[in-house]
Length: 229
View 1 (cartoon, one colour):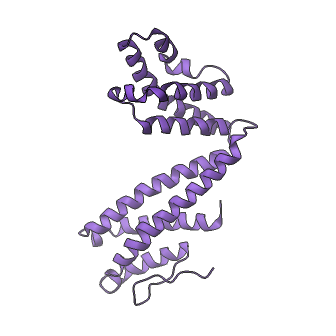
View 2: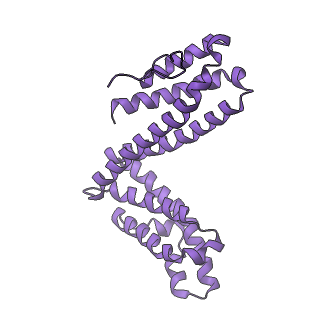
View 3: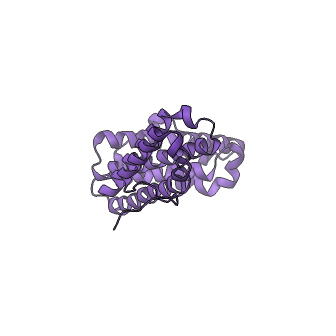
């Protein structure tokens, strides 16, 4: 991962730690609280992309087992709801295909498991409209498909690995930049100016943490001085 992204990740962690440490100062500020909540949510997305990125670079046996467990966990509610739908519609053939427990889903080699995961998703996806009353959503299908594709990419000699690694890197960079541009620069940086004179220790800690990500002390107009390229 590029050094600039690592710096920005460290900055986000540092800012959140400082903001929480000084909560007694900004606690009455609803906009700051909202911005922090959004930044924490964005951080979770970043951490998930980082997990995917690292798992793809050097997929260990442990990482593959964890991904296999995740795929199974995501599929169980999908297969369960589809099984109930098959029962209600007297579709015996469909019920036989989807009515499997966790042990049955995980049987076979890694390649067989990967094919089973992708096959299940392809089987269930066309039935989405009928399955919505049973609690299935497009987001659930997408999450399972993406987890399954990641497992496939972690297998030896996978053709999908480099493509997914590139996609993951781009998504990681986009999520980090989005957090900085829309939450930190557009909101938190400007709101911190309130504390420049009233709570200089808080303000200076925040500004020093911001420098980790390539940003210096705000000028009089309240805008950060961006680093030279």
